[in-house]
Length: 132
Image 1: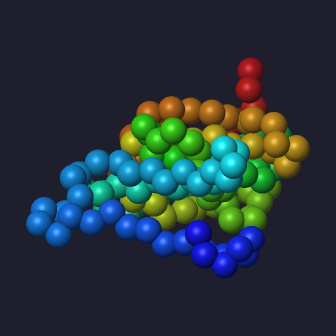
Image 2 (image 1 turned 180 degrees about the vertical axis):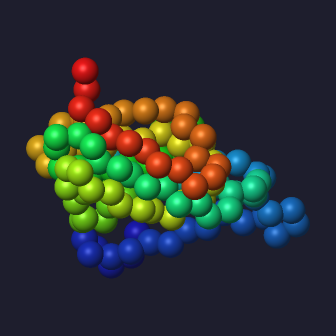
């Protein structure tokens, strides 16, 4: 870590002979054992970009949506990046095709939906509705 509290650090995984093995890689950042954030990425395999439309048909505004590769230990960062999907509206994200878990939260950090192992290998629509 360089530069005290506002510093930065860089790292890499390198195998000049054969490259990284195909698979899912996840980076988890903790400070003094406290989780700060994470991100996951597929290496190798066939993951062409696809469009994921999140269609909010619930009675809540979606303030946070996490679209995380299945197998990752953490949800990662909010994929809405500060945007909100109001009730009755939709938003389209571009993601690498694959199998994902999706978590949506309202503006009070309450779970609206939580689904696992969704095949998003093609353009898809994920419809959010109120729980029964």
